[in-house]
Length: 235
Image 1: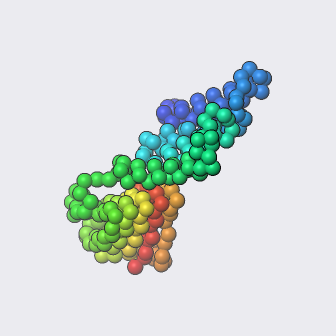
Image 2: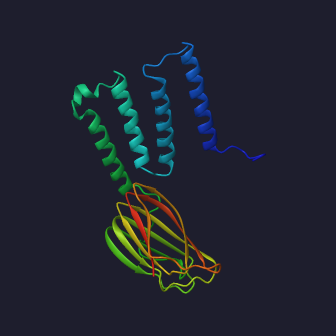
Image 3: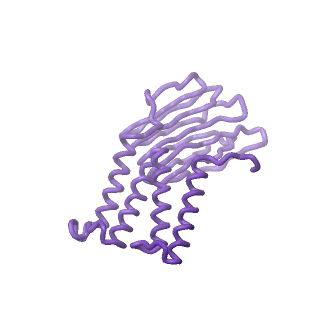
């Protein structure tokens, strides 16, 4: 779009690919050489960018797994690390085991979206919140002016029933945030549900059939899942 200023990440990716292109050209003419193939160098650049961006959003799996990939490339393609000499056959497998364990641990300890007071009202009768850690909970959302619900789960499950909730306006939002968790959302058939959830090794499924019309309210489900799932059940 004309006049649109580049964002930080557009600059980051743009400059990153320009640097990579220059490196390829210089390598072709022998000006610079790499200890590993140029394809591996490009992969390292990509994995580094993913890790940095994921760190800002605290998406720990996309922080540590790319780092594990980078370490694996250096271990298998160069002689600078020599992990195999120290750890033997555990070297590569151990890298990925450590990455997964770190991802799980950091996901438990450091989640930007966790809030104070896991159960209760957020800012009034129309905005509600429910959450659980290492357990399960069932919550009934019966507001006659429903606008928003925030659901959080970490190593647990949340059953949220919206079948008696009413939306006076034309839209509402349900936010889910979970790792190693499951969410069951019971919603009226006349709600038009829009899925905008970002997931890592998880997803959103639906059970039953909606019955919507042009006057049906739009309910957007958004948030982040890591090894977690959401099931939308129409009632």
